[in-house]
Image (tube, rainbow, N blue to C red; front, side, top):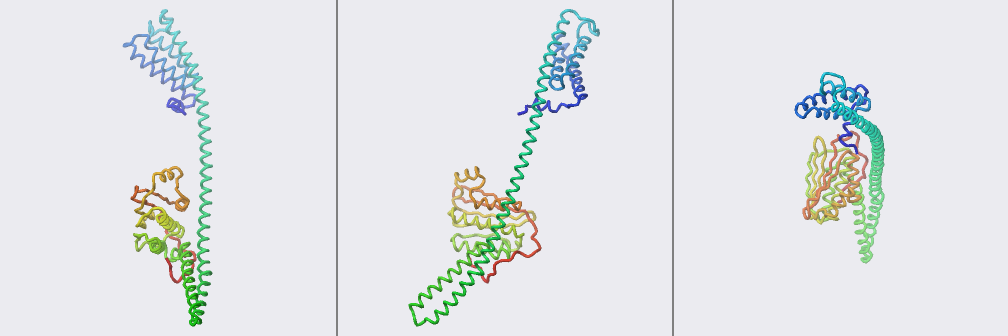
Amino acid sequence: MISDTDFLFAKIPQQRWARYGIALLSLGVAFAAAFSVRSVAGEFAVYLPVLAAVTFSAFYCGYEPASLVIALSIIGTRYWFVEPRHSLHAPAAPHLISLVVYAVASAIIVSIGEANRRNMLTLLAAQAELDERVRQRTAALDETHRSLREVTARLMNSQDEERRRLARELHDSAGQTLAALSMNLSTVLGDLERMKKTAKVVNDSTAIVRELTDNIRTMSYLLHPPLLDEAGLAFAVRWYCEGFAERSKIRVEMDIPEDFGRLPHDQEIALFRVVQESLTNIHRHAESPVAKIALERTASDIRVEIEDKGKGISAADQQTMAASGTPGVGIRGMRERLLQLGGSLDIHSLGAGKGTRVIAKLPHVAPEAEPPPPAAKAATFVN
């Protein structure tokens, strides 16, 4: 730890001429002060200012400038302040003794100051080396974080692509197969009208197949909604919130502008996942009868806000969030998605019984000109 005195020492120029100049300037100031105190405090008080100049020179300017200051201060003091003044002859015994004591004290101070100055030079060199090592370690840590974010981004993109592929496979393969099976069962049902018991079983089986078809279609759309690629974020969020309200019995209030428009594909996916994860958390943990979704688009950013009126985040959970940075894998994934795109995610507890507010922001970027990636074909959207 470098003190204020050490900081001042570091500011003294290291050029030889500069140190001599500063030392002589301090002596000049000391003589000016000596003329002022002589008439008030007596003849021997003049040694105090010049002794201060010697101390300053010894600690901050080095051995050689301080030695020059000692020699000039003895000559100046003898010439201007010691009787008989304006003479360089040997003074009377009392004044001669005071000059000798001053010279000895100055020599001791110079020795101590030079040792301290050398120690400070060593300390400052070590401090500079430590700062350089810290800078190098910080740069290496930043590079590691950057690499980790790149790996995370690639992993999330791979997850999105896999979800899109699974959704397409579920809809195009399993969905079509089940549709054909349903038609066959309907034909069998017509042929077996005379066999009521068998017809009832086949009828129940047909209903089960229809329900399974709807479930698979719903699962496919939840994995990657075709509306997100075909119509954009605003339509996909409306569709998802309507289905969520029907399934969870939680009323969803939406504030989505009609002219919200399209966003770049990565941004639409990231913000849709924030809405999806937030509503899932409300259903699982918040015990809220209502959820509010608001989408806002300005010239500088896009903002999505999700708020509930549930039990909020407990004090223990808030301490966990403060200690670890994120409370769970889902929220960590949302935050990482947004960080990759230059955005942010803020979570605020409004207090016990008042709910929680999630705010996601992304910088405004014009959507790309090329068409969106292909989506699973669907005739209808099932919530």
